[in-house]
Image 1 (tube, rainbow, N blue to C red):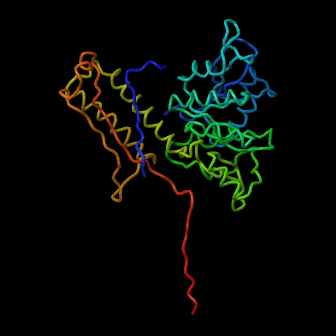
Image 2 (image 1 turned 135 degrees about the vertical axis):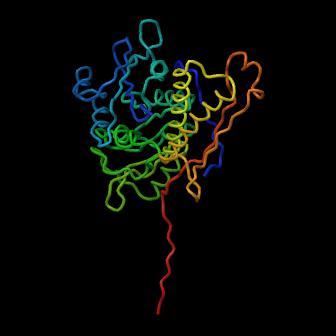
Image 3 (image 1 turned 120 degrees about the horizontal axis):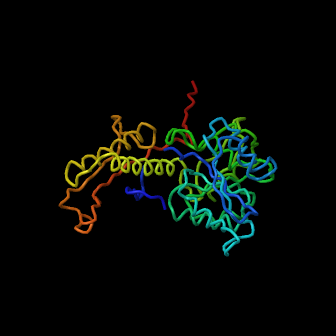
Length: 341
C-alpha cells in the first residue's frame, strides 16, 4: 500500500442522477523468475526489452498509435510458470499487488489465461480503484465478471491481431477526466468494427460488455460501461476525486510546519477539498444545478465531535463531502408530428 497520511473513502449512494489516471500497465508473463516494473515513453525504448514480435510490444503499439496516447506505458512481469514458490517468481496476482501503487490506472493482460484474468479482476475489484480492460472473444467468458465494476470488457472476436483493449485506452483514458463519455469513441487506429445485429448488441450490453461497431457509417464504441453496467466515466471521475483530494491533503500536511488541531486547521482541510471539487465541476465530473451552481457539499465536524481515540492519535476524522455526478446523453428519443393540410 502507498505511504500516505490522507485517505479518501467514497461511499456511492444510489440513486444518484491526476497524473497517472490515464496510464496503462501491461502485466505480462516472463520466463525470468525475477519480476520487473519499468516505464517507457515510446516504442523505441520499449523494443530494447520487448522486441516487435512480443505480446507486450503489440499491446503498447496499439496504445501509442492513438491520437490521445498517454505520456508513458508501464510494463511489469510475472512468472510464466505460475510462480508462487521460492525461486519460481511471482504469480500474476502477486505481481499485480506488488505494483498496484505504481502510477498507472488501466491494466492490460496480453498473456493471461481465463482463470488468471478472473483472478486479477477479483483482486482489482477489492481495491475499488483503477481498472482492468479485457478483449474478450468468447461470450461465455463474460458472465464471470458480472459482479466486478472495475473490469471493462470489449467483445472483439475473430480479429487476433487487433488489440481493442489497448486502443481504447490510448484513445480515451488520458483525456481530461469528466470531459468525455466512453461511448462513441471513433476511428480507433488499427481496429475494425465487428459484424453484429442490433439484438445481439443489446444482449452484449446486458452482459456488461462493449463492442466496436459501425453506426451511421462511422466505426465507434457501442457503449461505455463496465462489467456491472456502471458507466466508465462515472467511476473514472470518482477515482479522480479520490486521488486529487488525497494528494491535496497530503501536500497541505507536508508543506506546512504545522496544521493546528483547531478551527484554523479544519478550515485549511475544507479549503483543499472544496478546491478539488470545484475543479471537478469545471472538468465535467460534478453536476451543476439550473443556476450553474456546483452540486457538491463539504462538511466538517468541530474538535468537540471527534472521538477521543482519534484526538490522541492526531487524526482528524470529521471531514466529509457529497456530490452529484454529471451524466451524458447516450441515446436520443424524438417525437415528431406530421401535419397533413
